[in-house]
Image 1 (spheres, helix red, strand yellow):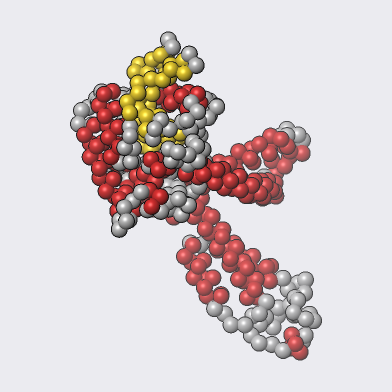
Image 2 (cartoon, one colour):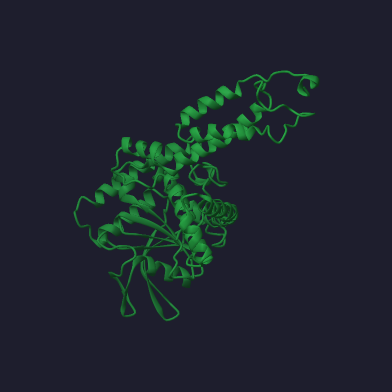
Length: 391
């Protein structure tokens, strides 16, 4: 589970993202500074992995340098642990006067697996759980970081240990694959200025404001998604039942061999699988990093749900254009005549004439449909007098 943040964050469209908000000196731009810090971070990362198996001390040095020289934490202190209410909490570093605790383990330790380097109270802890426990127990700290050299994770105070709220950045992917856009999003998110001023309350920070905005946007998105899922269930359910090849499905439902709740569950599962696939396609998360551009393009144009969605959208546009065009194009001599006024008779239904066109259009490429739409949209209406119309 991830912390809800507004999608406009990475696009620099969120409040509090000016040069002054990030303490960028006058005359310099945010992008130029991020590019400079990217190269600094890349060099620090390369230094860590000059050894095939970096030690805990080396990883602590790396994390300290990364936070200090790249993300602006100028007051980092090495802590070791905190004692609170009779308990011991391992905390490696602290920044922003204790507001940002940091837990570090070596690259050999996964952030979610118990580490031999984080022992206390007779048990081992993972870096993520150790940080989460301290955030939940500490009043001054609302957000914290954990790092193992390969990944940097931002975690928030959260009472649920089974559904953690965090955002994680793959540092290896960012620095080795030259993923500048991902680094820029990370830098904008975990810069020291995002955790609030020392004199302010922990809740008075850019991260908290962004989180609240993200929650509101998420609620609105869920509402829109709920409406879309409702119509998708109706469309798919009615479509499956009405299709001439689905007599067996209709018989199973009629005989109660397939209960309506089971049928609904199958439809719902299908809809959410489609939503998941569409989201993965739109965010470019469907393919492995080593998949070639040509194969990605082949999938996108010929096999993706996104391509099908584009064709359906174009067909809807085409339906509207043809429907409008057929009301103003002069009918052949053997076509049904208009009745009085501008309304066609029940026999002269423009959509009835256009249905064969759509049957063919759905098998056409998107570019073909666009050309057809452009051609139809350029047709000139024929000026007819009311007298001619009533003939």
